[in-house]
Length: 181
Image (tube, rainbow, N blue to C red):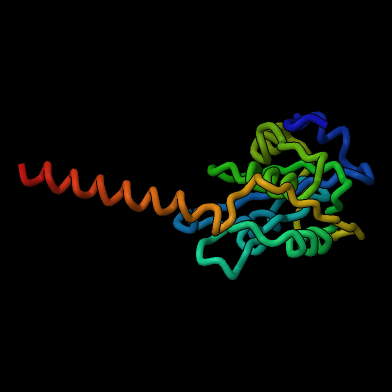
């Protein structure tokens, strides 16, 4: 399966037992938009909604940190997304969050994951079918196989954070010097 699929390809594949479309829409809080609400108002038939705010490490101080492999697998199972499925991630977001969904699915072991070229906006412009309401998940098992080394965890990232902090301090010092001159 290619990493990027067309709306025509997806329309031809809809209804296949091993295919799942996943709406990964997320919006900046200041936009006044809500991905879940927009999903309920209209989505690709049979799609599931991946809530990037919910499927995250809630114990971490920063938002949207990757959950543990077991947390991710549990969330995917509840959505009816299996690790062996063909998965098409899409969004309707100006920040293109389908890429985040694609990365998370791949990182935790799904091998056949693609992004929908043009997203939900193109799907609708072409007059393709849209479904409203909540998704009815099917039975699925997501067996996580996290790819080691793809993500820097807290201990590994600490030296980079320290360097960034020191550089910001130096930049602030330089700005102060130029303001004096």
